[in-house]
Amino acid sequence: MLYGMDLTIVDEDLKTVEKSFQEYLASRVPLIGKIGKHILNSGGKRIRPAILLLSSRLNGYQGERAIRMASVVEFIHTATLLHDDVVDNADIRRGSPSANTLWGSEASVLVGDFLFSKSFFLMVADGDLKILKIMAEATTHLAEGEILELVKTADFSITKEEYMDLITNKTAVLISAASRIGAVLGNAPMEHELALMRYGHNVGIAFQLVDDCLDYTATNETFGKTIGTDLREGKVTLPLIFALQQAKDIEKEHIQDIVFSEEIQEKDFNDVLDFISKYKGVETTLKLARDHVNRAKKFLDIFSNSPEKQTLVRLADYIVDRDR
Ligand code: FPP
Ligand code: MG
Image (tube, rainbow, N blue to C red; front, top):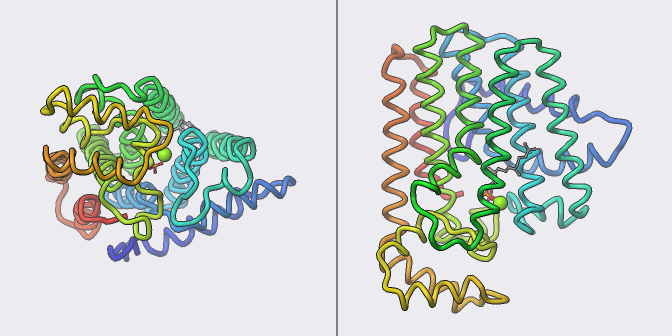
């Protein structure tokens, strides 16, 4: 169950994936298990493992390897979150104090390294060079995307195209890889593999765009993260980019002053919210997210109807309808 979304056909597999986390976290160093369990048991949506499992079943594969690869993709995602919360100075993740808040940045980064290394260990043990290549490429892009984001911090001249490139790398490539690996496990023809890769890419873009909107519009309770973190970290995301593109210089300067200020007070944050709302930044971003969800679903057209296909369609819809 994905917060109200029925994933029945892969529910059992997802439970096995959860169990395998414990096994893969086993280490003579107890801190690894402690931090690993804290973040892995904190209520992640498991979007990546669900997509990988559904994609493999869609292509006729239901064996053990899909479970292992689903765990790997969640481990890699978790490693990036541990690192990302240090980079973003985030104090809350999934409604609980972030690992860096509880155990410090050093421990968070190092346990992230453990999860990342373990993932590659598991893929080497699986022995499929094609899957290894897909993941090696995806994680390289991921790191690149995150570095690009760092370089673009507080850059008010960032364009929509640059931003889309950034989120393609930091978010969409991993979801796309998960979807593609399902096809590889099912020995799917190249046309099907590419369609699933593109499905994952578009779902990934939509996911990040909705995340960017929620950072302005959600409530702390449902979102499980602190609202306004992007702005406080100087991240110029699409709702703001759309507004900046239409704003007068004097308005831009005011927003810039807020972002560069020592601390962003509630009144300042509300000014930014009003600014984004005046230029329909959130609506335009959500519309774009919906376009990507529709594109994602279109890539499934070449598959005949099945419960797996229907679930992938619903999962894409869920991405834009979620509030967390
Ligand atoms: C969350 O974005 C962050 C990512 C999707 C990618 C993080 C990538 C890295 C830290 C580099 C790669 C690391 C490894 C181990 C290969 P966000 O900050 O917009 O989302 P959030 O609001 O959930 O924090
Ligand atoms: Mg972050």
